[in-house]
Length: 256
Image: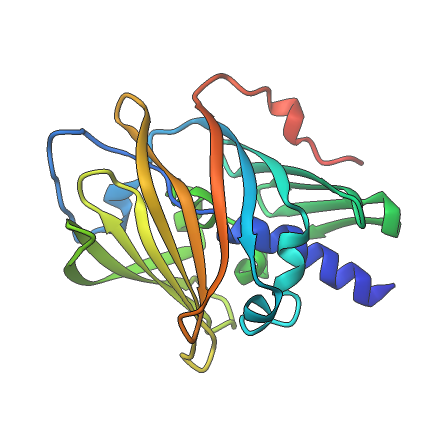
């Protein structure tokens, strides 16, 4: 049961961490910065459908032993509300319904079929937290309380200028880190690389086909996941996106 608990908790957590990249920017002006805080998004709330359109179990397993389980939930609904509130609902024929709530540092996982009802405080385990940066590439002020970014370089990527930052968890014993490429025009994360504690590349996430879903707010509509060998492990479609609609805080309440 404990093995199921770890696997299924990571299932939802990994989905959150692989759906990435949203931001806000002028569609005409390129404003670059070497400060990560200058890329904080104006998005207050967001909802969308996350649909797995392609997955390769063998290639996903090369990323991590439980990573393949992430993609057994083929369609999920995600909601986000500032500050640092996330909700992810899914359903699959084999696992039944699954719910993850994150409210600040508190994470709640509910998977009735496996009798999992888990509440955790991740305040001292920041590397296990799922942030809006991982979810949609959105940088919120709260995210920067436990993630710090160091400017690395400016690079041309996919025909646009991007700023590359090296991200580490503040005060965490975990040495895993990320490189992110933030597009100066759209303000979305166009690429993210995940490295383990030994600085070995684990996976690369590419965020493609950006769309201006609201004036000044861009989102990718396609996410491609590659393992360390460059093989495509999964492709995800991000659909039915709505921003700043006034989501109710009650949707993110952690059950007592």
